[in-house]
Length: 132
Image (cartoon, rainbow, N blue to C red; front, side):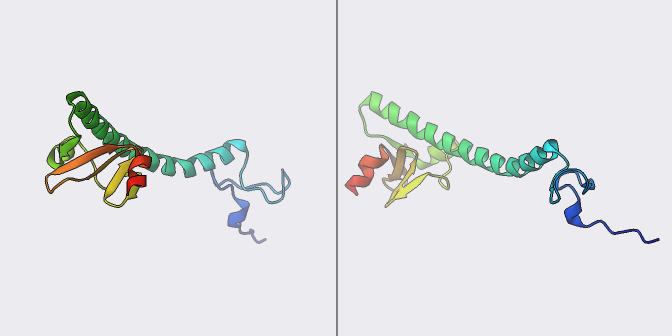
């Protein structure tokens, strides 16, 4: 008596148990709703963690520019910040949401090089882009 080989399409995609062809649809992929949800949650988990990591970096950049801009507004000066201070506070120049010309934006706060030591901080992506 020969033992039949179980094909991959006869196994649950999540837990690996054999899918009884007499139970449920012929071309089922999962044992039940629990395995179906578990499978899709596992797929989504990797994507979600990357999005959370990037959003955390963007939020840090946003806060640094927001604080610099608000401090300059209180002082009545234009918003500039030393590049070294931005690095020290955790700013990442590799992450931004938009770019237009020399300006890089993190949502509606942006920056552009003022000189080789300072960045000019601006607010209002739409108003800056229209001027360019």
